[in-house]
Image (cartoon, rainbow, N blue to C red; front, side):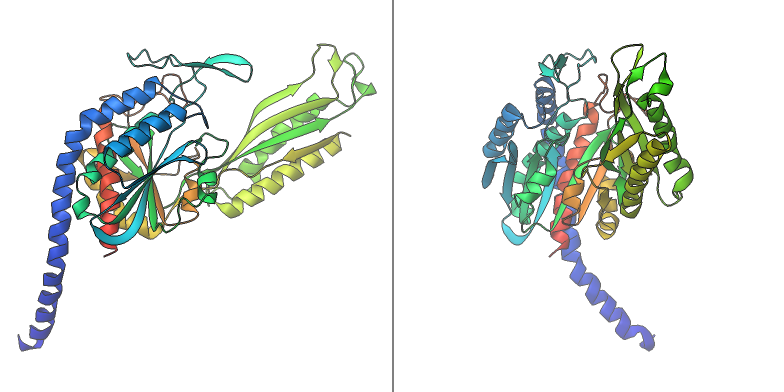
Length: 428
């Protein structure tokens, strides 16, 4: 026994030193749970309000006013408006000194005519690219804002237990153009140690989905201009048919993913979404314009795919006597979660999820400009299931039938509140 006496004493001392921290953590967890329930009705009300009055990217003026008013009513130390155009930043200072952590929600809606039939469905309309269309929170940003405002109320009520500052970022234009990247350029992450965000998906209500490293894909758009020689449709040999060339380009582009890259490392997608050329049935046109999307989860693979697209387009056209060029502007990078931060916060996500249902998932090929924040500081972005009761799936994001189950919102509020507090306490 004597051989183990000193190690046991040392272990006892270490455990004793940890006990106050454990007690404090347990105290704030219990209080967060209670406060989340107390604000639940308000969060649902806010979600319905944002859903009924959606605004497109960079036009979130009334949305921003509503958010700023809510934060001010909660007694926030600082509320900034007009950030990156229409963004809002709220600063909540705890009663104890410490670092700064950020929580983010996006604000913009989509040019989608809603078909859900909900009593608070959007009736807002706008002109989009020359066509009258509806405006809808078809990607769940209404839920993101309501959840973050719920977390703001929860945390404002326990600022005596906050060792540091919490920065609430309400970001415009996630759907583009210009959102997170503009905020980063304006210094929104200055003096911030970590950032957390979420996105709702059609999955079991209250389920939380997460993954270290690449969680959501990089998204790049590309355009292709194919130039041939115009001629009569009855005499194709007199010209060079850019429509036929475009068909071959489309086919050859599909071999990049299926035959040219190692998809065992990470998945990738190359898709053509539009093709336009010609204006009459018996005229072979001079030019065809195509556009598409590229999705990748590995930065080296991303660069490689870009080069292969440009080369395939150019050489395929040349083989037919035509010319073609692919243009790929800078897009949205991979949304990559910090490995250590994800490991540290996994128990928090499990506590927040419905019935502890927090799962490691495969990467999602959709994209999110939260990636611009994650490129700057340690970040964790996770998914929250919002499918209807008893369902494991539902209409996809961006669908006119996209549905958010209000019962899932409290799990998002608990997760966002707890992540901020857990991270701040872990830095003490």
